[in-house]
Length: 280
Image (cartoon, rainbow, N blue to C red; front, side, top):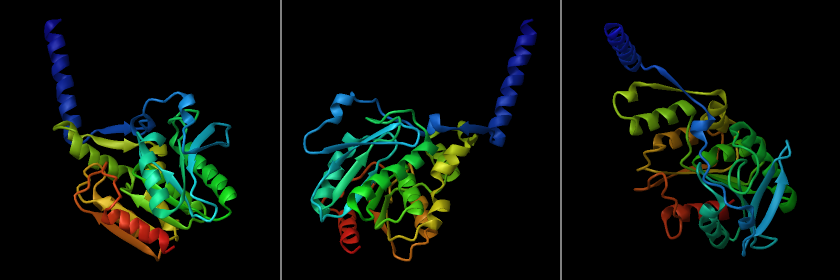
């Protein structure tokens, strides 16, 4: 019995080694992709200095957000934050957009995130983004600017591919699921596990396939990417910018910026955003 057990363990070890050596596939689904932070109490949705709003998704899920109003004549800007983000974590940036650009800024929580209802769902979130756009367009009576950060760029690109936008601003966009996941594997997973091959589910492939979807975007485009970003390397942002059908497009390198460095006040990146918004 002892010899049999030892032989079985040795066989398992050999099979495991071979699986690593040949790059065995590892399925990656939404549970691995979407990482919402702990939800705050709904009572915290009410906050001084912002206007609250709620719309219903196609399936009835409540989607809640904030508006920072600068005036009826101000341009509108719809923000889409990154994975593990929240409206409170983006409020400082939203205030910068409002004050520096003189824009009416809309923040919203994705389903399963923050103050919105439901469970996380990458494909449903794409439809929800269009519902948010339509609500903003109905109120503003004109096309808004759309901003996306990291995972939020996937929603921003989807909006711009399906609806008219005044301009599209992307920071640190992933080009596609496979490239994004391999970059994370190569940076974060130790040897020999970094031989494993991540395989995205259909919903993850659709959600992250920006380089494919942005070929349908002809709106003015500004892409910003840090050259020290190791989570989504700058080559992915360049691939997204190249794939866009926009004739009016600009790529800005944020020197020394990592993935989470999103500070625009007094920076060349902030100046580029201000120039982009004011010239469109």
